[in-house]
Length: 138
Image 1 (cartoon, rainbow, N blue to C red):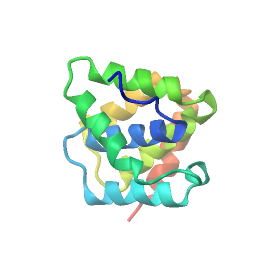
Image 2 (cartoon, helix red, strand yellow):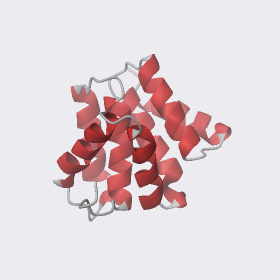
Image 3 (cartoon, rainbow, N blue to C red):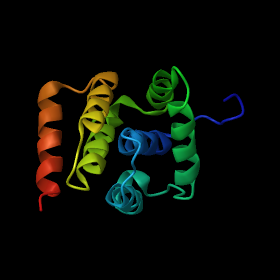
């Protein structure tokens, strides 16, 4: 994608959320609502143009169609995302995956990929996952 401008840190956070939601090829309404809610309310997105959601989502979908697309996606994310936001990205991803009260093996594997690619400490990951689970209890 030579004509695509580099992602911003916020774009990278959105790419992680969209990738986790779309990993099972089924973006549920609750997941989309969770993504939109986070964009509209979280301080990290304070100056973000929410209209970019569609463009970033399309980049994720296009990369999912390519043979090494997941590796390319993580390369873009790591390039755009400062290390201080790695755990934020993982927390947002966990919130999206748990938003509908359902998570399947594909989504859990994608979360594991995010955790590994962003070098999230296992203890920190467990705390983040627990927080997401209790926030989305029914």
